Image 1 (spheres, rainbow, N blue to C red):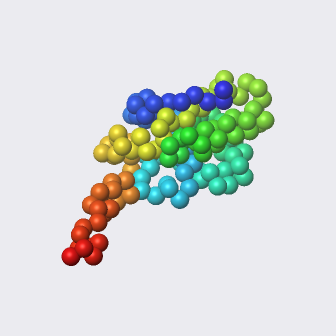
Image 2: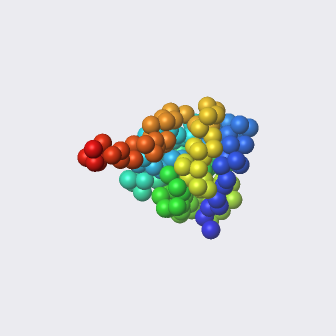
Image 3: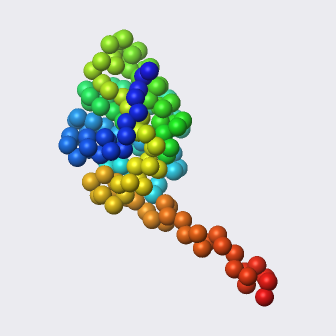
Length: 149
């Protein structure tokens, strides 16, 4: 396998202990769903067009020992980006490319990470309550609104 899954707790530990951009890098491949919050120091590389930019990313991150990819749920876009990244890394640096760098996908994606860590400004930034917290009353139709009066 080209990558492993990493828990939000383990990523949080890495972020609190290590230097972003040197010891690790978080790569957020969300597209329009990027707005509303992000992991601190994450780089947004939208999945749309990712394949056109992956070689540049491989070269610019070649010396960073830990990369963590994620999307909203980390079920499709995050894993696909991680696989493509490793494929291109092997093209550039040979079969041993995976030995000097660990590539992870964030388990549960940003949805799970933000739910747990949204109140920690060292882990999540730009978090917008209006994007993540839905008021159930917005979906309840009152008798007056339903025209039953």
